[in-house]
Image 1 (cartoon, rainbow, N blue to C red):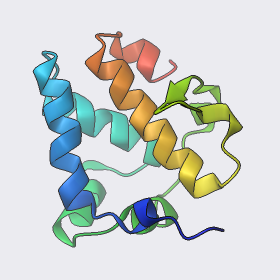
Image 2: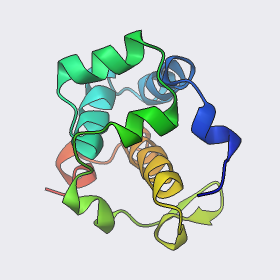
Image 3: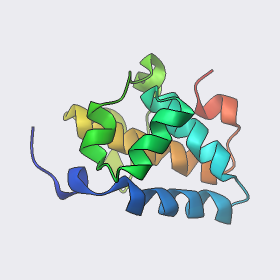
Image 4: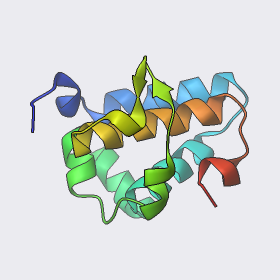
Length: 116
C-alpha cells in the first residue's frame, strides 16, 4: 500500500470541513455522521471515540468495524478521479467518503446516498 499524505490526515481536521461543506448546502452534522457511520460501521460512540483520540484516516478505516457491503455501489468522480477505478482499498474508502459527502451537499436524498 502506498503511503499517501492523505492517509495521515487527522479526522479532527477533516471532519469540520465535511460538516461545513454539508451545512453550506442546508444539510446537517447528524447527516454527515450518519453517512460516516453507514460507510464504516461505527456506532455513534465509536465514531466519537475516533474523533476524540485524533485518529487519522488510516486508523479510522483500519479500525472500522466493517465497510458497508453496498460501498461497492459508490461510483463517480471525486477531484477528477473515478472512485470505482481506485485500486488501493484505503484510498478507495477515503474517496467513497468524499463522494458520499459530495452527494449529501448536492441535495441527494439520504436513502439514495446510503444505497438503501
